[in-house]
Length: 155
Image (cartoon, rainbow, N blue to C red):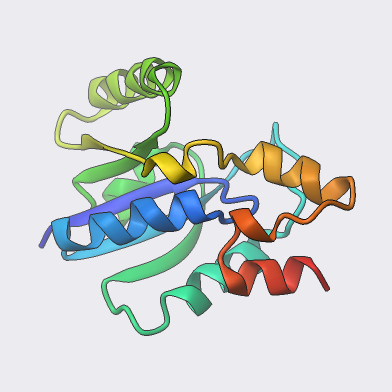
């Protein structure tokens, strides 16, 4: 079974994330969208809220599930039997950053391969950091968010 972990903070889950997940579905038997808990980051939305969005959006897609994890991504991959890590790339700078992480992960476990998908051009400017700034400053973040996320954020 080809199990893939798509790790991130997903704070919030954006249309860019959903684009990557949807285009990865045909490639894997199961995609675990893993919300990584990072002590260095103070998220805007609780891990449970983010997990709820993933579950709501993919309630009819049995190959996608959400999870919350702590620690090294490769360790969590081993725990869930994932041999692939999925990462989305928007810009060349993303690739340079992601490649260093992929190289480190490969050093830690050579049985786990990182797969990169480039985002659709229309989602290139969609970054959670920008979306959080829009929300924090009372702007309309809806164009960057799946409907379920936008509805709960705008409440």
